[in-house]
Amino acid sequence: MKDENMLLLNEFYKIGRLLSTEQDTIKLLEIILDSSIKLTSSDAGTIYLVIDKKEGQYSYVKRGSSNKGKLLKFVISKNMSMDISLEKSFSSLTEKSIVGYSVINGKSVRIDDAYNIPPELGYVHNHEFDRSTGYITKSILSVPMKDRDNNVTGVIQLINKKKQYDQIIDYKDKNYIDNILTYNHIDELIMNSLAGQAAVALQNNILRNGLEKLLQEYKQQNKQLLFLSKKILVSHEEERKRIARDIHDGPAQSMANLSLRLELCKRNLQENNTEHLLEELDSIKHSIKSTLKEIRAILYDLKPSFLEDGIIEALNNYVYVFKENTGINVDLKISGDDSKLEYYMTSTIYRIVQESLTNISKHSQAKNAYIDFSIGNENIVLVIKDDGKGFDMSKKEKEKYILREKGFGLEGMKERVSLLRGKVSITSHSGKGTEVKVEIPIPWALR
Image (spheres, rainbow, N blue to C red):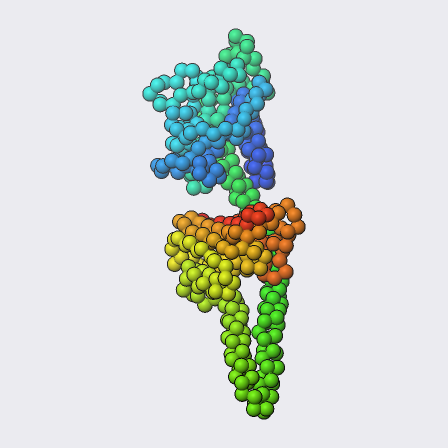
């Protein structure tokens, strides 16, 4: 007996060392099952883990609390006497099954004869496995796996205790029953101890793997952040160049022209040519108004003050200015409440509308544009269409639209929207106009 105890202690020491060092979850489960079968001389065994039905992640059952939304996942099995391959599966967590009863109540279950379970116990053995495989289940030991907080994370079920661990049972032999023993309280004590170690080791393993996954995601996000930071710097530089071009081609040219015309006015004044002087001054007045409009448009593009009053008012004002400047009719439809939208979301929407309408005015030859902006409970949907010439999506005309020399084009839209977990799509046909569709999830819907 003393020698048996020493062997048992040595076996537990080996198992404990393996459980604490193994980092692969599947291999860890194999160690747990192999050790369970060996320590109890079982012919077969299975491990089930508690799974959260909604999230699909490993979970637990707390005694006395509801197990609603939890499932049992069959994850691994082993049979010493028969070569049986079983697929991973899920089953409902109910006290009517042996493993379910063990998990819900946090108690071990010992059954001497699976085919003669007293009805008053409430749980039954599912004979379907035996019928489909030719295996015969006799004795069962089902042990809950409890973590440090006494929560049940899974269950180890052992079947058919044998006289010897390495014994192979021929279930076609009519005397097979002579080789099967019942589990005793020593087996139960051993397995309760092992199941506790296994639960803690498995929990640590899952946490460690989860942390490693988070670390990898963190590194990936850092790379993405660095990439986006560079893109932002490039975008800012391109934006500065664009503004410089707009000022040079617009107000700067106008001011140079005004300077020359003022010199002409000076000459007319010196020559007492009142008629030509008044005509020139009137022309200069109109030019100044036009230049002022260009300057205001540039300032408005940089930071629309109307955004401070919400995206709805900003879009209404921008569309009004756009129609006045281009002569293109814009049908704007807006629904929903913008009061809870953050500035970073509204500025993205505004810039996309701005860029799309700029594309329409410069490239589409459209007479009409249509904007449908909807703020729902879970997402924002923006659709911008025109009745212009469109383009062939398969040809280089698409590239001109996607990668414009000025502004940020479709790729720029996609980058901005992707930061908000949204998506952008574009459809166009020659002679049938172009449609840009943007969908962005609302932050509170993601919580």
